[in-house]
Amino acid sequence: MTATDMSPAPSPLQQDYQRFLLLGSRRAPHTVHVHETGYRSGTINTDALGLRYSHCAGKRFSAAERGGASRINLLVGGSTALGIGASSDEHTVASHLSMLTGEVWLSLAGCGLNASQELLMFLTHQHRFGQLGHVVVLSGLNSLAHEALCEVVAGPGDAQQAKAYQDFLNSFSEGMQPAAPPRRQPLWRRIGQALTAPPVKAPLNWALSPPEKRLARAADSIGRTLRQWDRLLADSHATLTFILQPLLPWCRDTLPSGEQAMLAALEQQPANFDRLLEGAFDSQLHSAFFRRIKSQADPVPCYDMNGMLSSSPVFGADLFIDRLHLNDLGNNALAKVITAKLGLAQEKHAQRKVTPIKLV
Image 1 (spheres, rainbow, N blue to C red):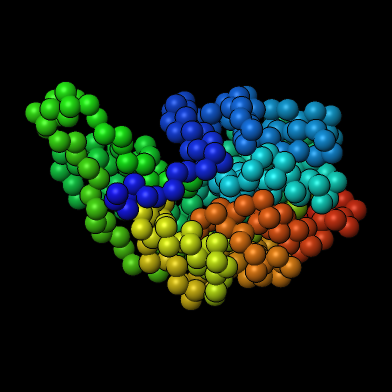
Image 2: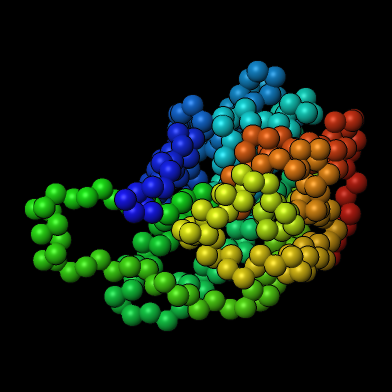
């Protein structure tokens, strides 16, 4: 029996998310990357727009199904904000924020979205939201991955590699794991495959620029976009906050036993998304990345969840299911830290004080 044969089968929870992410390849090409619309499962459900439901006071809410809520709040971001890893819609960060604050928090999140695409998603659905309270952008890593992705696509390559790059792009998503080894094919099929040209595989070695350069470009992109958010919301009473999402190597000096085992398995077979973050796991690079975001985004308030999450009483427990996604306990801890940091539980809906800024 080989090591591959002995690898554990994916759990039902993982299979549910993998099926959900695979179906995303059928999205309409003229829209921002969104997920399968009207998706139904015991783990994750989406509305007619492909956005995940959140739950508040026993009811579910989404951009397409806002109900009678006169004021709503938005959690914006990628797959961490979406809640890849939560056991159900009730256990996402948005749902936990709804429970902790007593207000409706909608999930405006999509796997793989970078900072500009997050803003475009908001502009696409802005007319659906009514009165906005808080807008929390929980993000950062997709913009960094996209910097590497652009380099991969723009790198030198001949015509034979074109399909390999396209296959790679089609498989790119924050949550996607490496494909499981295929079952042994019947003899007749193996003979037919042997007589045809072998499929072109994606190049194994990527010529990426130094991580410092990718981090700087990503930070500048995030900062510019946050200033655009600020100008866009300036005439409303909404508050805007950016929170750099947690990344396991940036969050912890030591790992709980469950996360140690998980990380060891990931290192044996890294996902494409992990490869796009190559070289960026250093803590000093992380600190410089956040400082640059904060400087570029001024006057938008910016916080780093990688430093804040350690204030949670459950920080020593297993919280991550991979390098960037959290389990139910992790999502709850993250929501509690956000609630405490922003004073949301005691909020009396004070009007936002708009800080004028120069157009750039």
